[in-house]
Image (cartoon, rainbow, N blue to C red; front, side, top):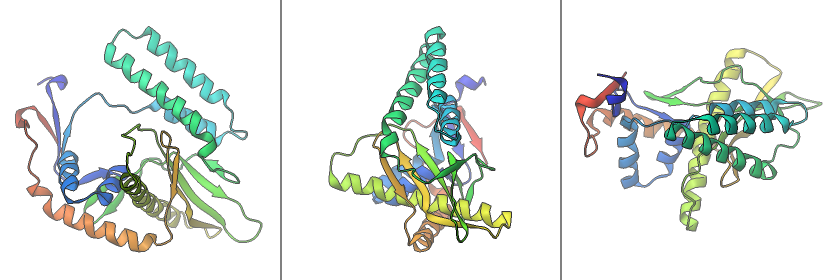
Amino acid sequence: MADSDFVWRVNRRPRATVLELGEYMAADDKPRETILRKLKYERIAPSLIYDKLYRAVVGFLTSPTLDRRVLDACRRDLEFERDACAVIQRRENLQYELNALDAFERSLNALNIRSFIFERLPQTGRPVQSEGVHISVRPTVRIRVSRPRGKDLIGALLIDHAKGIPPKTTEAELKLTNAMSHSAAILNRQVSEILAEGGRDDEKVSTEHCIIFHTYRQQQVCCPGNSKKMMNNIDAVCRNMARGWAGVEPPAGFDPSKARYRG
């Protein structure tokens, strides 16, 4: 079967991105069922990875003067590729990436980055394992805050470029913030695990500097101070997720003959 004939990707083992798991933690029981089904049975579609934007944002944040020319160059590249592209879907995806770049630039005033030193990550794709659930975590940059006395504070910034659905009620806003808080707690665990393996005694993980930032909503949420308690709750939920993974029913219209399986 040709690659284009596959419609589904079935995850044999439980896995989620850090943002998906945050959303799951903040959801009620019924939405959780839907999220869980989507995590196991992924609909294969042209993905919006935004690689050019990701590299440009990393280059911009890690430049000594937050050089906007890095973003300008990214815009020119995306516009050139979009205008030269004959494939409609690809052209639309490039426009979405340009829209995400616009949103990032508009959000810069809301991104509180004073006194932060941004560094390229030594490890960009290290997952977090929680009770049998594989959590994909891809921070944008590492954060360092140098102090004249005491250890340097270490954290990470994960920028979410997805537009999403704007919240229309206070309850919806609170759920989005709660989801981001859980994602920030998982990010804090990743930073802690990497730092512990490094063996340096002049650095200290700071929950305050493990940050999720949503560009379209211009919302910044750091890891809460009670992150250990929050991670205990996440571990308990992941334990239940792993226990019930085999029993997750496929969605309507699922065709096993058009599915790929991932271990």
